[in-house]
Amino acid sequence: THPSVPSQLHRSMANISVDRTIPKPQDNASDGLDGIGFTYFWGNSPALDLLGDPQASAFGVAAMGVSPGQQYKDESRDKDPFEDEFSEPKPEVIEPKPLPGDGPINILITGGADMRHVLKTVGSRCGGGKGPKIRFYLHETSHEVLARHLLFAEIMNNTSLLVRERMELFLSIYGNTLIREKDSRYIANIVDELIELVTSNSEHPLAEVLDFESLKFKDRDAIQQVLRGWKDDVPFDIEALREQRARGYYRERYDYRKNMMDWDYQTHIKEKAGIINWFHYKAFCFEGVAFETRLASYNTPNRTLASYTEAKDRSKGTSVQVRGFWGDIINSPFYAFSITTNPVDRPRLFKISGSQYRHTETDIAEFNITDYLTQMDVGEEVHLPPERPEEHVFPYASPLEEMRPKVEEVKEEDEAPKTTEAQKKGRRRVRKQFPPLSAAFQDNRVQVILLAGDLRDQLKKRKYRGHFHRAFLGSMAVMPLFQDAQLGPGSTTDPFKSTDPTAVVRIRQPPNVEKPNLLGKFKEDSSFASAFAEGAEVIAETMKYQAHFEAIQRLAYRHRVAQAAHLFGWRCEDERRAIPRMEHDMKEKTAQQIERYATDFLRFVTGPAPEPLPDDSQHLAGSDLDALLLP
Image (cartoon, rainbow, N blue to C red; front, top):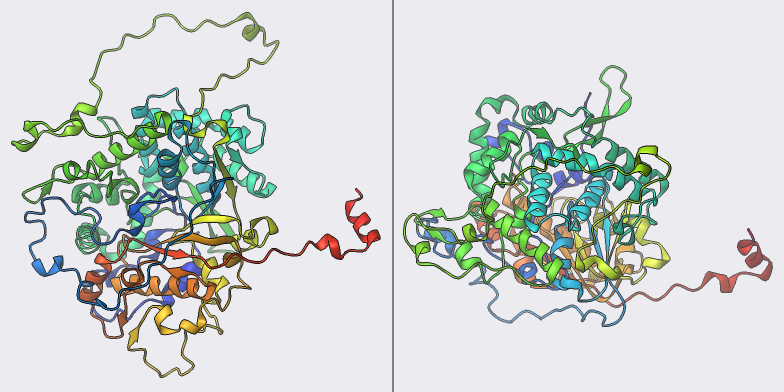
């Protein structure tokens, strides 16, 4: 068996691609789509506090060191291409409406691929049991990703473990294909409880947080099947499966894949996120291990990365489901927690000596997740200890060393835990004892609703009309957005497409400039537009941190998302940097410079709230209404 034809998203990406006649190393391998994979287990953008985060409006280089030194020898690369454009007039300031003071705040996350935004938002807003009530609606098309959401929610709230233990467990399972044996045992031991959560038979405190009512029974069954595959007796040779993926991606250049890794790193990673160490990125590409938090053996397969994809049987030609590793093998999981940090601690964590960062991306991820978990538990931020003179003298002591626990010898207990008579006889079931939830999740302050299937069908429901105040759209989950705006592949009603096939668009402007008359054209017919309250903020992930894709493709993607939003009646914040103008003969080097200094995200403010739907029961005759109410 072999993977089937790429999905609709992959086909739509081909529609916005550019001519590849210029020879480059990738021409002798695949186009990158099979390297990204079919199941997305982590995002390619920094974690955000979705209720208000300066990082959402950030632009330029995310992980630029505070003392660049010789990091960028070409001074022309450090020139901001936006400084000389559109100095007058000043763009209109567009801001979302304030969040509701009473009632819960509803946040939609589709294609987020992980729990990074939930972790940071809850830590920042509900830490220590304070703050507003928040409802997260997590939508994924993959049941494997939804199952991982359950696992990470449990790890975040397992207060029986120290914060550092939770952090190490989180990072190991999050982005490593090979994990520690103790991590694998932890997963296997929690599987049965997670299955009981899905079937609503659990006494775990998380049962008050996780809501499965919006899932169909077939989706619940699929999640249970995924969870059963995490048992440690289920075979999963992830090393061999990942090697097969690498051979399919690099093809005849497999023996020289290190050169292609170096191409991707130098072209797409170093200039935007230099904190990511080349040796660590190479180790991820070769072995799939991204985070090694301590001296330990990472030799056990991470079964949470197993997934199914549709394929065709070579002999029979029938469709089959193939279990394997279908995650990303070229985009590392470093971006979520490793390229930004608290501005107070950033000067010391991102310091450069000569041309080398003093800390690595793993150090930053450890510090950030420790901070988020601590905020959840006690409501206080974690900062670096006071600066010491040793930090400025070779070999440059790290401030993180003082934060790490000292190694102490622990004596093993000689006596095994005693078993009660009731347990020996098995006369009655012993009630399970669960640790309390993190303070941020207690008192029903945070609720997580899981969604699956076609997002457009979900948003058409009456209960979601004008419902959401904030939203995040992952870059690999925008196909429903395009389809809702009639911009999908093969669309014959694309209003931005010229009717003259020979016409050449020499300069592509933002849709608000190019075709202002189309603002809100599909507002009434769009399930996306009708699901948001007035003045809500929608944050869309860009492809800025995607490896392999060319810069012209990334800029074209920004314009396509902006066109869909324009048709819904949404206005773009910081339009000048978020949607740079494109010239038809733009060189790749120029596009790389523009993309590098563009915003990390696209932010849109929705228009007026939709009119409430009429109550259908008022239009029914008495006998018809009785028929609906009778059992």
